[in-house]
Length: 214
Image (cartoon, rainbow, N blue to C red; front, side):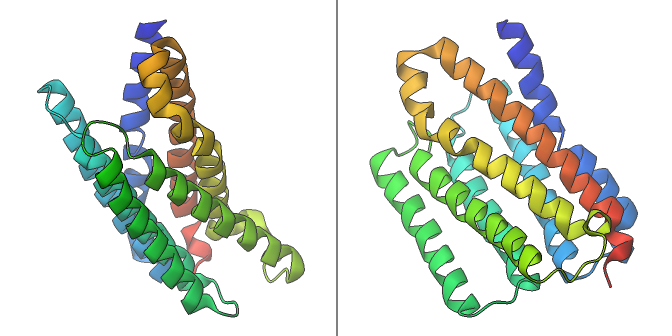
């Protein structure tokens, strides 16, 4: 069973190559939102390579988790900022940034580089899940897109909602399970891997649908 979860984790890590390939192929059709998203994929790919390398070298790579949370939260937040329009938009995304940076700083104080940065990762998951739900709600109130399945933003938002809402409880209990119940922690990591592969696949689909972006 451990071998299965190990193989699954490798598939999860390398799944970022799927949207990377389609991003390279389709980048000439990208508007601002997808350009920011493609930059996120490039950064995520680099971080996955660093995680893989440091793991092979048996180097403590907890700092990469902090960097991932910060860059992921900021870049995906910028994606939403680029296409969403609502009252107090600037105030909301300013608060988003403040909460993200504050929880990362608090995580560094409480957990350091010994444990996972569960506080900031949960804050990121909660904030992005809320934004994704709000975007779907706004689509229901004002259906501006006739065929939402043809919209890259629909697939991007679906990926964000599935991945981040699914990971809230996984990150919440990860440090506890890592210490008290390694087998359950391994299973939780397996669920995270499946969510990550799903997210990468939906990001690739976002890029495939990019011809619908002006």
